[in-house]
Length: 93
Image 1 (cartoon, rainbow, N blue to C red):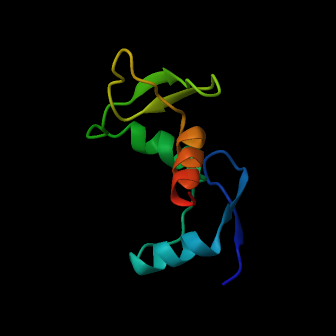
Image 2: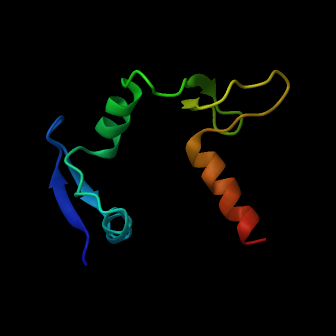
């Protein structure tokens, strides 16, 4: 299965539906997405049962982001990209 380019029904931007994501959707018996990842996460955040998200500033790169937990004073907090990069380095060490 090659990657597929799909136009988002909400923002009209074209996004890539990767082979890896296609496999995951197929395994879960889900249809291919109609919205790009940004629009999907915005829609999910508007649901009444959506978990709370907290605004943060990444201690590594300074980027503004949100996290699904209440940050504790005195503990560092990372944006999604820095967190993923640190996890990847830890796996390969």
